[in-house]
Image (cartoon, rainbow, N blue to C red; front, side, top):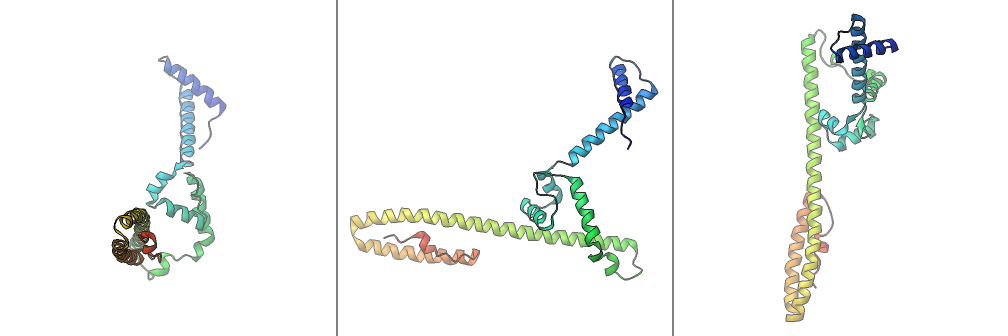
Length: 218
């Protein structure tokens, strides 16, 4: 699109002045005003495309923030900043295919010769759906595992806090009733710690001994 000239801007300003007072611009002024408006719209559009909020990009891509960051770091995709420059991403895409496209399989490499374009298009759409489903499943698996690990870590921290309470309680019991009740209490706590330790070792792969976290109540 041809850029508006200084003459266009002067004519456009004249057109606006006439419109504000109820006048009618000339044909030349109307065309100049239209060019100036188109240029302003194009500049605004480019500005917006070069500063897409990362939250919006995350919604568009259907990917989590962590995944986007990992892909940006691994493949050099310009997605690492707080806002996304679509122009930079577009350049990256075309540069990527220019460099690696000849090594990527195409529909013609997979389907037999003579396959109709309709079937080729359907095959491509099916491949996209399958890859997206696999990526979504992988992200869900990661999210679930991270959620389990966070839950397990929080539970272990709570056990440590309970251990302190149990130790104080055991000290009071020993002062009041002697060592025998404390011994019985400790045996029960050790059984409880082993049970919890086995559960979390099975669920999060952590080899920490839960008995160490729950503590000896002596």
